[in-house]
Image (cartoon, rainbow, N blue to C red):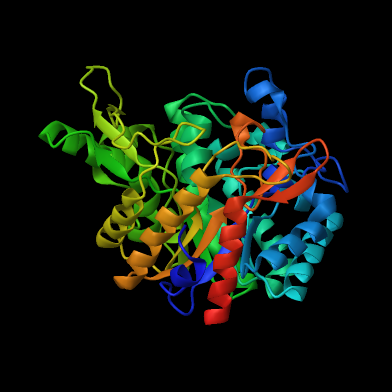
Length: 453
């Protein structure tokens, strides 16, 4: 096994080792202290949407156990915590009345992080849209972008003084395509028109959110977390290479191009532009405000081939077979070189600020045996992918930190509680936390790095 001390030496002096979670996945307490339902509360209670109709009502009970969880982070020695703020705790109806008790919770959390010397990286939106906003169309409505702007202002006015960085959105690819085109995530739409409206209004909300953060907390570093896809053509054929470029425009460019170039990709617009909502004057300038940092979430490559069917809709691709036979328990191919090639390609294509790996990890469902969780495959995954990140930093790419997904097992969206990504095992019946083998190694790495610096 890779020695954590030797491994720590490979990272730059200013690097951060952290862990990540998200509000709906861990907090529970969905009816506590004035919180009202979000779209995931509704979606997970609809038959056939989430595995076994699991929901976030209890999750990891972090809302009540946050001190225990912060103590765990402190014991592990991680230097930063990436978490998300639940919009329906702060503005339970999406707009209107501010819920002070919701803000109080994040006050306590941030004070607890500061007391323990752990940096706080907040995400304003990790998919828990207040359900009341669905009455206006949710993310398919322009008004939701302005509701998000106000929420960002309210949250930052109260919390920004103890934050080290903030992201507007987590993985808009998921809350746009997965939620409005493929129907896998809340609200479960399957409509290209709905998805294209959600795309532009989410991008607009990001820009308005950046503006809100800068107005309220001008010195707070603000960024965006994107799950950019490492698009790999299934063959060297001209058709598959062209398909890979279309896939890049659809899966990456639809977010990167407006944010970092101030326009939507050309082939994307040629194919789908007539179904987009009206792009108002000034929208693209709002979206393309310069960012202080960006986050990359990476798990697995996207291998694609050309879809030759006449009726195929842009990007007109089909999945290509994996190269690696190693898969995680959720079925995702393990292939760490794709992380390195993705980062290099994105920096070649775009003028990007410094990067944090804001999520990276693996799903393996080992249970405790005699109080120990031997999740060696997850540990192997971390070693391989962290090695790639160290290599990128050594080549001069601005890699600033790494957040393991996740601190602990949690509600894995449509998969419910059957898929486990945590460094810490959670027994959902007793809420007992058990540090896994991978968690012990990651803790040793974080501690060795802290000693080095």
